[in-house]
Image (cartoon, rainbow, N blue to C red; front, side, top):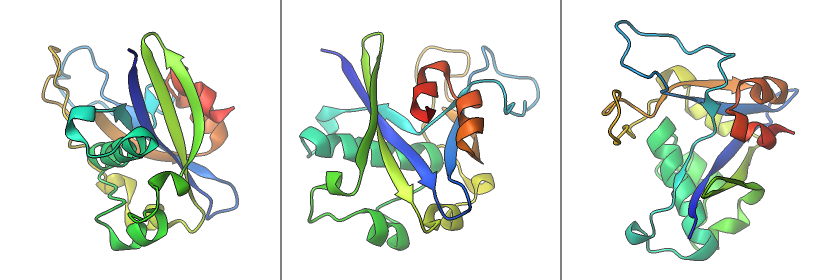
Length: 178
């Protein structure tokens, strides 16, 4: 069975045109001798997402996908849709199916993995006002045998327009911005 990865495409609609939160993947083949600033053109930017871990969940079906997306958002950016009272009131209702708050934006396949990205529309700009990108931090560490094992999976964050996102997104994620 194919692995399933879920996440959020976060759209801030509080300004004159929507902005999207992008995360820069830690992608250096070996640890740098000095910090390297992520390029805004290197096509290594992604939306926060991750693999569903059914063994570590009380949810089933669509709810496990949303639970995974919420967990990955917190691990990769620090944005806490449940622990932050302002965001919880706006985006999360534990008494309703969580899928009522989020619409499936796009589903696609990469090799043996199915990717399902849910759209999180923030028309009030609450996420952007609660979490500054310079203060965001990824707590999820690279855990595979790799020269960067132990480094955060994500090392930078940006709010970008749809056109910018389509230029900097991983090739597999450009489909999200068409």
